[in-house]
Length: 97
Image (tube, rainbow, N blue to C red; front, side, top):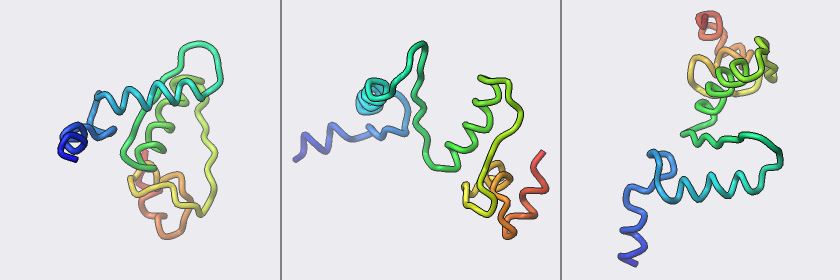
């Protein structure tokens, strides 16, 4: 038990490069079809994922528009709230550049 716990100390998949994160990334790449260069990004939350998609997809594709489900919850960060279209987040959505 002590060995298992000590192996995990500081080994959060979200804390940077470490063996569990590398193993997970390699496994995800094995499972994901496609050719060419592929990358794995590990984030902390759905908000992180949505914020990253909003930056990476336009940079990679040149597309300037994004589709989101109006009224859905996309996260608690300003960027994520901006795409939600939920009336409770209206003030935040209007403040995002």
